[in-house]
Length: 181
Image (cartoon, rainbow, N blue to C red):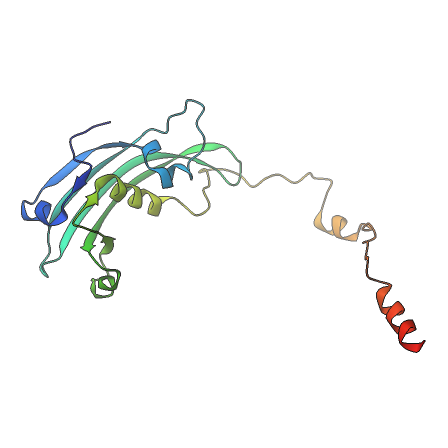
């Protein structure tokens, strides 16, 4: 892990100094992301390399240009094999201190909420990686699961089904008899 960056930064001070931070973060350290990753036999997930450049835009907003590169071990939902999803993501985020401020941001910015002038760089990297994880991970080139050639959907539908146990089927008849008596 490269420690050329502090854990916490003040985005306004960093923007004033046009600071840039770069390094690597172990994927296992990113708790929300780690739950989406494939379990590794070796116990390690690898690292994410990042660069975060702070500055101001023409409107005076604190912005951060975030570049993240990582290979995420995911489980293919088609073949159930582990594969590496390469992520190379660059985005610009704007710092906000209140959720209501996101309505005023230009569409080209993603908001990042900062409380007490403290921003954890690892959480910024984690957010970028979470946005990059596909909803349904699929290994490139994975084929559809094979259905045995001797089974077709029509055959399966036409076969007799087991009788369904209906525990209250006789209740309507009992209710009618009780009403007559």
